[in-house]
Length: 82
Image 1 (cartoon, rainbow, N blue to C red):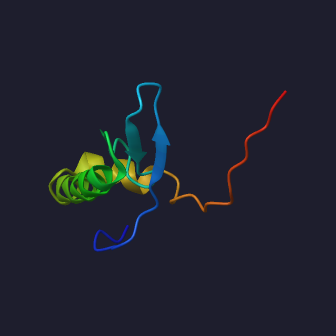
Image 2: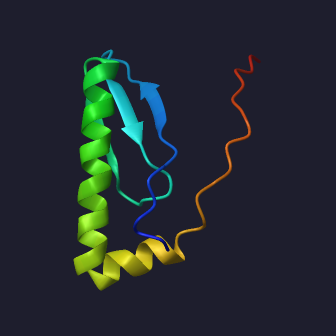
Image 3: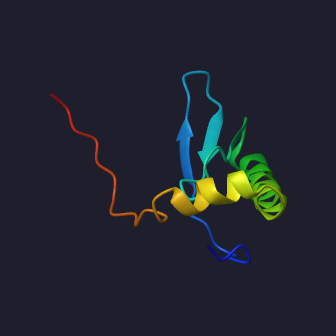
């Protein structure tokens, strides 16, 4: 895995309390939350940086990233009612 990668897909959702939650599918355990999107964007950048730092020092975490399926290709999102 290229740890110098500069772009990561981030999934952003809003929880039942109104907080925005950002997670990075390509980095296991990489997520954060905030009350507004501007703060979330700053925090997710920090979380990505921290995960990449850990991967450089922790071979077990690095292998989890490498064994984790490659970063998924985003196709789209739908809301389906039943």
